[in-house]
Image 1 (cartoon, helix red, strand yellow):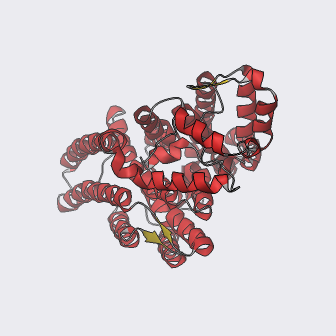
Image 2 (cartoon, helix red, strand yellow):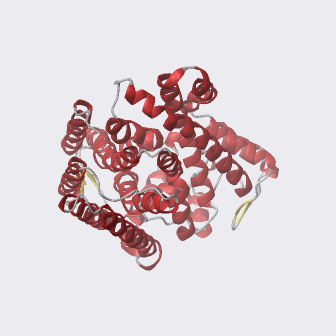
Image 3 (cartoon, one colour):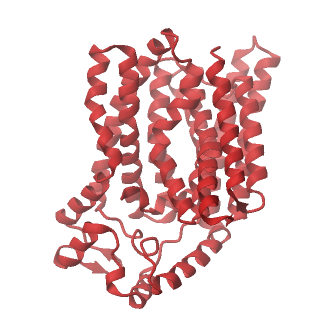
Length: 444
C-alpha cells in the first residue's frame, strides 16, 4: 500500500536523510532471513521470482520495462486513485454543468493527482543525491500549489493565492501535526523527536512571519502608497527565497550530522528489531527507486499536465461558487484548497506517527510548512512580478495574527522534543477555531 511506504523524499523534507550505502544494505540483508527482506506484496515477490529482469548491483538495481511496469502498478494500486474518475468528469463539468459541479469535481480529481505527482517526485529524487533530491522536492513537491498559484494569479484572485499559501502553512502546523500527535500518542503514549531539527524549522517560520508582518504594517500605515508596499514585498520575497536555499544547503550539506544523529539511532534499533522478526520495510525496502528515471520523468510530466488542466477548471469556477453565496474566497483559499495538495501527505504523516516515527512526522508537518512559507510565498510574489500582477506580502490582518499565534503555539508544543495525544488535541482544536472564524466571516 502506497501510504505505508516511507520514501526518501520524506526524509529529505526534514533534511535528515541518509540513504543506506550498499555496504550497510549488504550487512542488513546478511543478518535477516531472505523471506523477511521483501514484505511489499506481489511486486517484490515478482522481482524475486524473476531475478533475471532486475539485477541488483553494488550501485543499485538495473531497470527494465518489466520492473518499470511493476513500479507503476504498485504506485497506481492505491485506493485513493479510485477518485481519478473525477478527472474527466471535472473537465466535462467545466463546459456543461456549471460552477458548483466544476469546482467540486475538479477539487476531488486533484487529490489523487497530487498524490501521484508527489510519489513520482519522490521516486525521481531517489535517483539523485541528497541536495538535488531536496531541490526536486522543493519544486515539484509543491507543483500543485505552484500551478494553483499561477492559475489564480492569472484570474486576479489574489485573496485566493494568499489564502491557499497561508492555509497550507496552518493545515500542516495545526491539523497534520495535531492529528499525528494524537494518533501517535494514543498508540505510543510519549514520542520523542529531533529538537534541533524542529528548532531550526520553527526559527525559519518566525523569519517568514517577519517578512509578512512588515509589509502588512506598512500597508496599514500608508494605505495610499501601494507602490512602496509592492516594492518592499518583492525585495523581501527575493531575500526570503534566497534564505530558503541557504537553509537547504545548511541541512543537506554543511550540517547534515546535526540532523541525522537520531535517524542513525532509529536505524540501528530497526536493524536489531528486524533480526528478531520485525518487518524491515522501513530499513531496506524503500531506499532504492522502484522505477527507472525516464519512467519517473514521464509520470511527473503526465501528472503535471493533468494537474494544470484540472486546476485551471477549478480556479475558473471559484468566482461562480462565491457569487452563489455558498462559500467565501477566504474559506476556499485557507481551508479547502490546501486539502487538495496535502491530503495524501496528511495520511502519510498519521501513518508514520502510528508506526512510531515522530521525526518523519515533523518533516511532513513542520518541514512542509517551512517550505511553503520560505519558498512558495516568495515564488508567488515573484511570479506575480513576472506576470505584472500586484501580488504582495501584505496579508489580511486577521491572517497575520492567526499565523503568528499558530507558530507560537507550535513552538510551545515542540520545544521539549516530546509529543503526546493531548498536545495533538490542542493543535486540532486551534485549527478548528480558525476554520470556524473563516466559515462565519464571509468578508473578503
